[in-house]
Length: 188
Image (cartoon, rainbow, N blue to C red):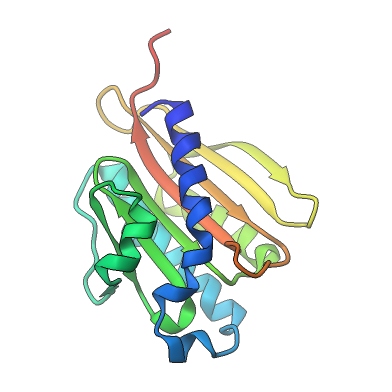
């Protein structure tokens, strides 16, 4: 997967943001936003332990103890591609989206970008020290976008991590997204 394909894939995932809320049961959807610290912790741990680690090691995804999202709703996130969608806790409005052969994403309707920024950077560095942050950009709303790269994470492949967070969540849009994927860099 090259850089253009990665960008297009991220765009399709972002378009599905409005479908995050319906993935949770209707009763849960009425509840207020979860505790920001507990939410951010679950988001980061789901990403680092269940998504990034599997992609980086080219290993199977660990979905033990997670709830699989109904096939109909998962189809909106998978866009016709093979894969599966999981939630570590439906009340937290966090989804793990696994796209077979194309990496994984962890997305959330809620989040605290200011608190997430140092935690995600520290956990990525701790879990996968070969990933180097190559880009960081502060968003106009105070959120951020960050890209990491490991140019040699197995064979002739590279690993890419993208983390985006809005400072102020907007209804119908994702508050946080973290993506991990393997790709073969274009030949020089």
